[in-house]
Image 1: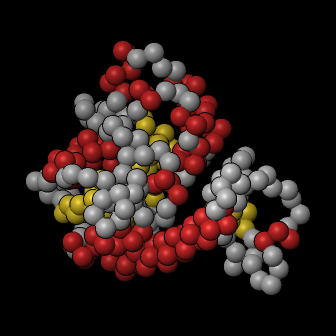
Image 2 (image 1 turned 180 degrees about the horizontal axis):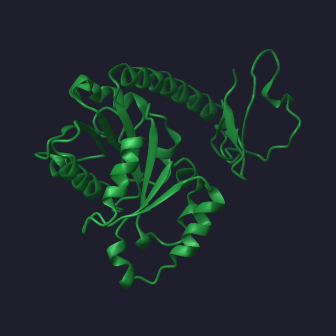
Length: 266
């Protein structure tokens, strides 16, 4: 069975890879390279374009194998897994803190905390009833700007899956790379802060397109911001008309219950 790839309009389709070449389909492509179903962009500016494609093929193949293993382990233990993504500073960790406070005594929670360096965010989540496993990508993973499936798997021996109900994977703060890597999650949540501007879905479409839910965080700041949320919503619909939008303030707690309702059904 072939994999899918995305076009600029967001459409996706599968290609069967038997004896026929990938180029046998009859629609045109721009000078964009597809690595086994993934649009990795125009690499024609590099003399090493072919070698780069080969490297990407190896990276994504390994990732997909490990993601499948992760997903099988999660299913075996009945653990719901949410991949939580955002730009730096959008409020992922603050949302998780409020989530842990409200879930104490009602759900068993595990967290895999991803950062390039430091344990600052992991430390903020300690003492709230959750098992927290830190993954610094600078330690053995080249300082990557995202978590991938092998990184998540490296943390599973520190997260007792038979003792938790839900696992949050707090990805590295970045609006690009985290969206490209399946880590074995059941659902993807993206935290957006109105301070980032209304155009973000258009500038970073893959992130917004792959999100099941977009949490508009820091709504307590709206009275002080010159931001057009209606325009943001229109831009979001342009790239992902199916995304659920939740209005939340992790600081005041407003809307967090609706987030928890979504998590319960993820």
